[in-house]
Image (tube, rainbow, N blue to C red):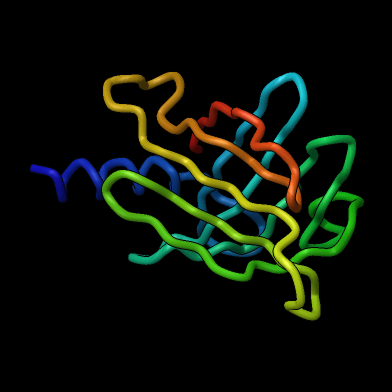
Amino acid sequence: MRANRSIGALTIALALASPAAASGGIFCENANASVDIAMGHLPVVQVLGAFIEADGKAFSTGPERGPGEPIVIGQAFGDDDVMMFDFVDPNFEAILVRIRLRFVAGNEDVPLAGVVTIGDGAPIAIECSAG
C-alpha cells in the first residue's frame, strides 16, 4: 500500500510536459518565496531545471528558466515521504539553495509542503503543488 502511495504521488509530481522532454514539475510558493522545479519522468528524481526566488534573491539553472544567479543540481532524493533538493554553484563549491518537502496525506490541493533555505539563512515555509 505504501509503495502505491509513493508511485501515485510521484506520478502526480511528474505529470506535466515541458518543451525539453516528457516531464513534470513542482511549484511552491508563499509571500516571500517561489520555487519552480521541472522534473523528468523516471523512476528516480531527475531535475531538468529550476527557478527559485527567496530572501530577495533569484537563482536559475539557465536563462530559459528565468534570470538569476546560476545554480546546478547537486543532489536530489525522493521516497514515500520526502523530496530533497540541493542546488549548488556551477563549480560545486557551496550549497546555495536547499529544499526539503514532505508529502501531505489527504490534501489534494497542497500535496507537498516544506521549506526552502537560501545559503545559511533561515528556512522559509512553502506549500507546493505538482503538475
